[in-house]
Length: 532
Image (tube, rainbow, N blue to C red; front, side, top):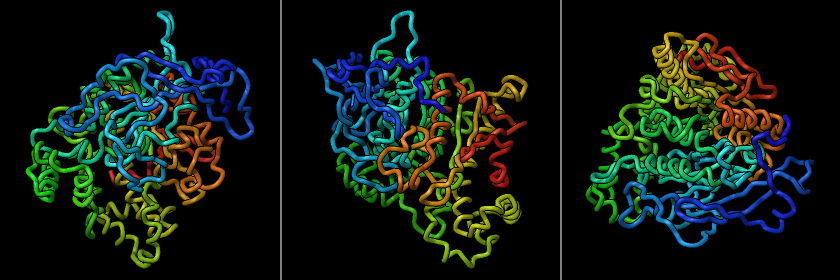
């Protein structure tokens, strides 16, 4: 597919840009200074010359005050106005500390207190005239299990979306116990409150960067995919975005009792009262260590407990922002007016079992899946539906089962809930809310299967970025990145990922299968249905 910028793109890079690389924009809080860069090009493409598409990056713009001191464990407070011009030339501090080593995405940690920031990438940092429409906007929420991850990844750079006429924003939020832990006297779901304030910032400021606040798509991967699904099911968030793209979304939907139990346990381990004053008396490093100890997976039944109950730290059903589970919200019709793309890789967590083939080799497959929590009839049907992966050995079979239960079952239940809500509202399944389902099946050249995170660089069209070989192997297919990225651009720009990708319905169950070549399957998740 051609990489010619879309008609909406407004590339303004020229010889003058090279001579004056900085660019300034007025936000409601004050003026910021960003920097022009060329868009990334594929090998063999021209990279110079007047008129080449360009991207202006504004990094580390604070949308809230630093969450420290009296603001620690508090709701985020909008950033106070500043005087003069604020440099936005480098990524700001991140909520992630150190390197948790939980993903294969390069996500650097940056020390410092002012961790609530946005990064804006735009091809046209000028406010549209009254008779003009701004460019569509993509807001990216990073993953990391709700306790790790960073918006400062070079893979999340928006320059290639800029090349195709999309303003891109990446946001930060508080992680782990700091963002989601239960504390007596503190506001709940502080990480969600950070998402909401960042999205409010986008609504109030993105026009100054050339974006259209009435065309905002939120997207994310893993916990970030769960975040955008959570927001889609939240009444209080509906005015902040207009479409959702969820990659390997892992929702948490932690119950209130479970959240409070964990909070009290961590407080007891720290020797403090489970109150705002108690937790504020503990320094950040010590709290992170206590959080890690309390949430570690230990014991033979730990994985099954995780699959049955979900994550211990993450968005919580608090009766305030979240009044019910995300799937129940979809069933009630929340977010039904917003288009949704969602999907998963074929073997998200199979890489966690790569060292287990010898250990699992002599375990009968029926016993293996029953030990993993399946009843005898479900185990029988699941094995019959997954014969091909079963032939690859017990480790691959167990990896597929974990993937299916953690990612694909919740995803298919979300799709079913949206469809049912649409049918109740309209009386016809064909008029259900627009949802597009995909599978990413291309096998990594490193792992030999489509593992967790593999589709992210294809989404951002950054296969020439750093640290790619450990995830994708040598020479991942650029044509597949062209295809997937183009569908993402189309969805952000128009609310649909292209004419050749049918929307999902109960009748067709159409599923885009990304591979070489890609296809549209009638029911791309048939092998998961025994688990539903």
